[in-house]
Length: 163
Image 1 (tube, rainbow, N blue to C red):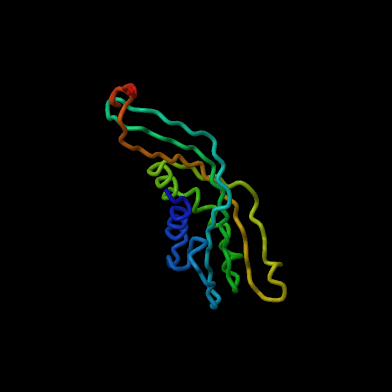
Image 2 (image 1 turned 90 degrees about the horizontal axis):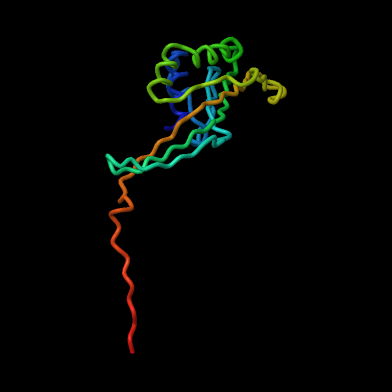
């Protein structure tokens, strides 16, 4: 699961903004030149909590699971006051009914981890409103593969070279 894309979908749905204004970091995205609001979502850290591997004899599948915390930064920006006025809507979107349904459907959980960080001062004399909202997701990754179980390997044999 690509958690950043799921979070982008949640924000687009809840803030009722054009999907082109909510992007995942790293898509060669050029910030718009207009005054309107845009949101950039990026993944920062991926902390592994557990990793398991087991064989399911009935299906002859190897099931690998990794449970991790994925840290995300949601950056809301605008040249007008939209980012300032709507920054709390991001937090509301993450706890909305739509978000909770997505979390249940895809087996992950979102947590807001810290305060909203005001980064407006970074732009100096320009009038760009920018806020970072740190979020943590608890994600379960599952991969199933068909494998031969131990009793299906060919029997070993010894080959002796005689002179």
